[in-house]
Length: 367
Image 1 (cartoon, rainbow, N blue to C red):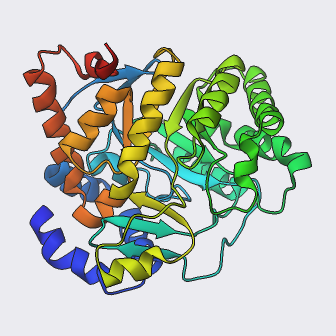
Image 2: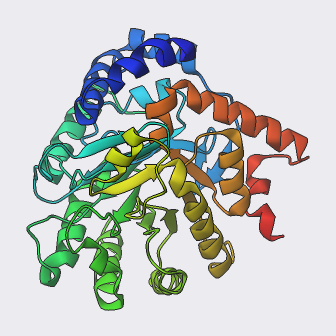
């Protein structure tokens, strides 16, 4: 099936607009992957081996999950475990519905194995997503694997009210995720990255942690970091967030920087505005994982995302300090079999290194 994807589906999707290809994929999975027969079919092809790790007091069958941005509206939650992921993250979700930026706004640099997206957090809004998830739970269509929610800033909300914007979304979605990721670092919402300034960051974190304090159940809240911040600013953000009780970090978001393009097609794609993900992001993602791991002394989990496309890139992120991993772009370019292929490689690496489990490899570079 992986070969079939490369020979048929992937070339076909390359011929149409990237956003349309993405929409068609979600539409297909929301039908096929949400039905027991479809789940069985996908699971038979894409099942991943077990490589358990406990993070946030939750058991993950292996470290690899689906990154935010693929299933924005939580439409295909049952498809992701059927495709071999051990967990998934829906969103980004904002308090208010928004259409996002003008189209076209998603581009592929094929030879560079990179995506550029300028989506602008298009989503139906927190209340609509919650209603969809209420209906899902009512008919027992909730995944058995952990689910995270990515929370972003509403475009129409100014800095004066941004703390209540994030906390309102968190409150609305509280019962419909196992943990939450606060997105303060997307380059596609004007002014969003200003939230990394100390006063604004503290306001957002305090308001969200206050919401958690009112709930009957405590759930982890994570902060997603920008690859374009300086090392000094990243360390300062880490210190502030840990001082306020953050439970973990996601390293990293997309970047506005660009590699030297490998082809004319890549040059055209990379010339567009938006955040870049995929292979060219990996080195910077590793740098951030190592920075945060060392600054935090490994006390809080890190989710590594950015250019996870092979066993070696996944192992690099884990030994640098990531407890969990996410991918997005590599599934676009390689198909769903990339998930089981990476996990199989991680099982081999874990055994070859003499570890009793993958958890022992986390941050091993720093020992």
